[in-house]
Amino acid sequence: MYPKFFDDVLSYTTYFDIGDNNYSSLGMVFSCLMLFQIFYFFVSWKDTSIVERLLTLVGAFFLILSTNFIPWEDISLYTSFVQIIQFPRRFVLIAYIFLLIAFAYTLEKLTKNLNADKKKVMYSFLCMLSFLMIANVNLNILRSAEAWESDTPTSSGNNAPWVTTNDPDELRAGFTSGSYEDAFKVIKKPTPDYLPLLNDMTQEELDEQGGYQMYDEQIVNNSLDVSKTIDEKNRLVLTWKGRENQENILPTIVYTGSQINFNGKNLTSNQLQKTTLGAPIVQSKKGVNKFTIGYKPLVNIKLLMSIKFVTIVSLFIFAFAKIINNFIYFKQK
Image (cartoon, rainbow, N blue to C red; front, side, top):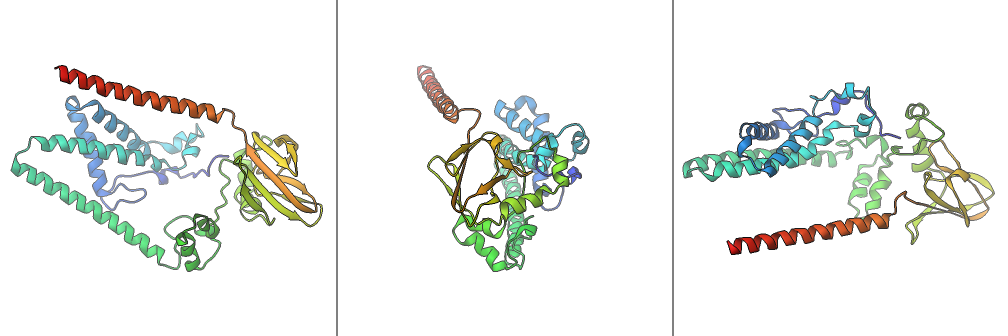
């Protein structure tokens, strides 16, 4: 199942602005920096290195991809790829990193041959930019702090509908207790993204049947008192006490590649009855019940890790040989 798709996808793009920098707006400082880097790069193409070209072109590509200059709504009519992306503005993160590094290269070149007076002007200009950026960050921190101290600590995010308590002190305690799992006790978000679509069901059909509500009832707030642990093989182990022989829905999801053991009996995905979302429906016995579920990937993970290790070692050897080669070359020269 794809993540939730928003029809007005253009509302979730990045735009250039002369105001503050925020989740969607680049703001005045970053708009100026990025556009300057891109335009300066093209007018001085011949004087740029391969690294500068790579950084600027990749950064510019993802910057444009994150904006409303791309007809995202039209594209969504022909491909489901937009549904997977969900928010095109996510691409701007890559643009921030690449274009700011490229801008640093540009500044280094521009200030290299300047005389003392011009360097003073350039440094003053850079200090001004730095101050504006720091001021913008400070403003965002103050806004977040204000929300955090308010009666609705989650107001700055999109988690408000899924809080388990309306007590702001309990919400704050969930994130400051020192135990990471406490955060998931005060906010439980029923999101059925990436769950299996069973019996040829379509995304639209599951949405119509209330996929989010199903996930909330069957997984997040399942009424069965289940103890969850992880065994030595990294499998999820669900344990519960049955008062009588009865049918129960377990708070987990079964995929085609899932490996299952229920009360000592090995089962496959096809041998289990499942809900629309893929949660297993089992016949509990009186007393202790144990349901173990793992997953067997299509590709051997150990093989992939071995290939990764060999690749990394090979790159290190190649880099080391290159350094030694250059050292010998310059020494002879």
